[in-house]
Length: 362
Image 1 (cartoon, rainbow, N blue to C red):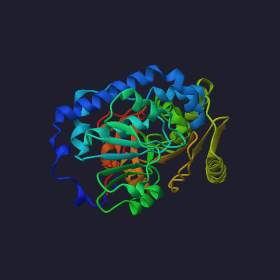
Image 2 (tube, rainbow, N blue to C red):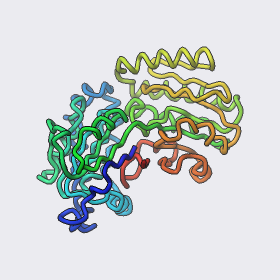
Image 3 (tube, one colour):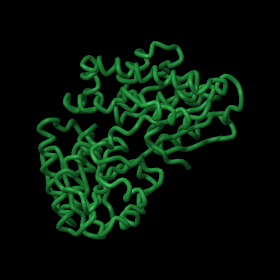
Image 4 (cartoon, rainbow, N blue to C red):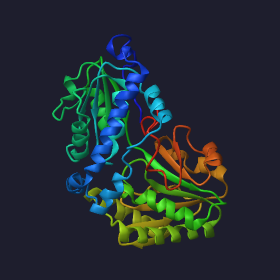
């Protein structure tokens, strides 16, 4: 979620504004090139990432496929245009998706000639590797940075809404805070979609990063009747089981396990449930409120009679929706929040490198 604190503190002149678009584009391209070197070195980094994230080795390898190593001129030009201008950007990262630091650093580097970054203490490996691979003093680690001591520039914060609120209260009055908070991914399957193809694509989006992060679909809305919803849920269960044989689920946190037991119990009582060793798929009763599942390969399938039923179905959570995957982007775009990123099913984890994943603004 994008929060602006003290928008009037944005710099109006100086070094940040003197950087032309081509220079900023070149700075971001060097970061993307560094990501390519990190990807080539992934075998060395993978054990540390598996330990810190809880992902299995296969899950880490799958996650590395989402590291942005290529981007078109059009994508990077859009990123630069959206980044704004700052004298300096300080980045504070979370630990949900281990490849996320690249996009965060690219946005910061497009905005400012100097970037410092505080990695998540729970998952610092890729951030450290990226900073080292850039070979530039312009991007530096600041692992012990005291937020309260920051008194100028911008602060880009990635984490929970609670974390962002705490940091906003601690920074000096001359600091602009851009917060990227809690988000939700969902999938929409039209009445004309092939159920098996849709289920396979959704399963791939769910398995990546064990469904952590706002690009992972947790809810699937199916256009049609209960029979079509049940067919999609059963097929998704089968596809997730097949995926787990290739990419087993990693360890869940204590909170994820508790939330999963609670969610599973509620859906087993009120709806239908398909369980595998590494996943759960639930079919909600028609017109029931969306019971958002926790991370860890848990998916809720719900029906809407027509695509225009998507908007009322998600009204209670619309402000949290960051990403939508669908087989019919043109039609579905009219019924989802305008800030949501729209992708084809199976491509939700690889959006264009054209700015922050989260396009919400308040």
